Length: 299
Image: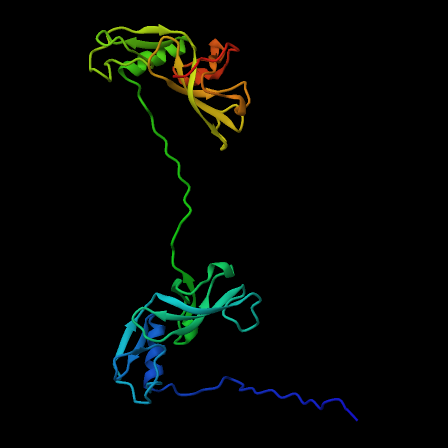
């Protein structure tokens, strides 16, 4: 007849701790850890063992006694993730046990890698040691290894002032008054907006300003799906608009029309902010809106 198994509980315990001698090789390794250095030992074949051993595991020959500082960084060769740490584990949060080949070593060291996301642990990952604050000459003097820094998140804010000079100042003062100023080249007769002092095509001076209407035609456009504080909504349209009487288009927002209805050749007119809100800024024009006129055929 089957019977219940007989079970006896045994506890192996060394009150006060189990003391053993380390020998010259392991003792040197632990002493170096206490000084926050990691060393290996060289074999007769020239390989560096980390952790160091008294005998070459491949040949059984005694090691040379030549100690070599390695690391401190290394490369993960293989790993196993621990989602739920147990008492006695080096970390109280998810981590990975890993074989780490330290720089300059030919064998791998087993230690913990502090990586809470298993998808971010991989063979070939570069890791660096985190040292305990009070080293004592034990493998736990290395608290754990952490992934090498490969990216950072930084808050970036740049504040600067732009001083409008020459032609731009003249143009913006016109915008402040609700007028778009351009200039006609006396040599090639092309009209440019915003106003500029010289013709970009022939280099001739443009001596005078020319008031242009705030109506024009969309020559090309782009639909934008990322928010912009200047835009009326998302998606919004930015377009090159050829003002009536000019030869060079200017860029502006398009509003008061669904993005999918914007098209080349559409006739538009500037929508200005109220006069008492205007400054020397292109923000005086909220956007350009359709006039309802027939489209202009594009060349």
